[in-house]
Amino acid sequence: MKYEVCDIYEISGLERPKNAAGTLTAYVPEGPAQGGVRLRHRPAVLILPGGAYAYCSEREAEPIALKFVSAGWAAFVLSYSCAPHAFPVSLREAAAAMVYIRENAKEYGIDPHMVAAIGFSAGGHLCGTLGTMYDAPEVRDIAPADMIRPDALGLCYPVAVSWGRTHQASFENISGGDKKLRERLSLDKLVRPDMPPVFIWHTRDDQAVPCRNSLVTALAVEEAGVRFALHIYAHGHHGLSTADVRTNPSFALPEVSGDIVGWLDAMLGFFAEQGLEIHDEEDVK
View 1 (cartoon, rainbow, N blue to C red):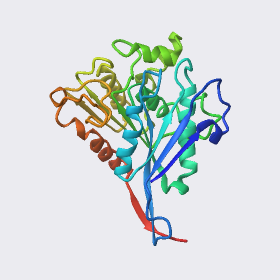
View 2: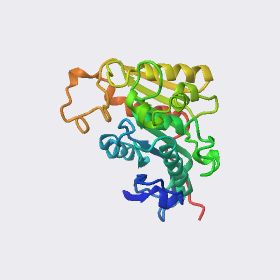
View 3: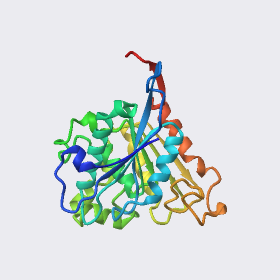
View 4: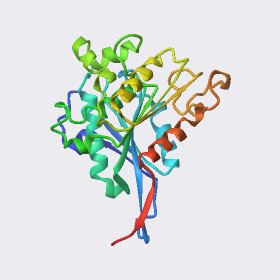
């Protein structure tokens, strides 16, 4: 496996806001492309951990990347800037990460037309904005919209809706307390017919980020005519990540639905339905 860590500002040439983070870590399986008679093109995923826009959770970073690698995908984890940095700093970093992945697709053995983005909790919100604001004024200077727009989205127990029962701290952090900006950044207001297909999952028991965030978003996606899948599991606390003992050291099976550990397989199946799957072709060199 190829493992690389790079600074998103150095590789993109963007001007770094003071004290901004922006580290991209690549996990790329070794494939048969080197010197073989066939070329392997694999999908890639940009992973956006949660953390209320206050920090980036390690539990939703490398463990998720390694699960994708085990499925044959290339995975890239973005440690994005959080509070006191507000919108659009993290969105610009995510956009630059998408561009970097596509521009270096040949080096990594990636099909540049098979790059998904997934996010957890507040990272799910960032993923949603990346999938709906790829041509917004805040990112137009980075690259054309088709280089920024993911080919599919995965929203994992996302902080999505800025009104009603939601995770207040996440929206306070990303909006910097600006009420108009907070309203603008509600994902149900950003949904658009030409956004990528989206897979959403949540748990009914989530007390930190109520599952209405996913339900309201799914309804908006449906009304926009966007392809989607929605999984609401009955039992499980917030921040499950892989939903097993690897990321939940005090994990208690009675507290979760038995099929919740299969969320990633369900997501991969949905992505495959959208055309994101490993394929080989003859080496034309």
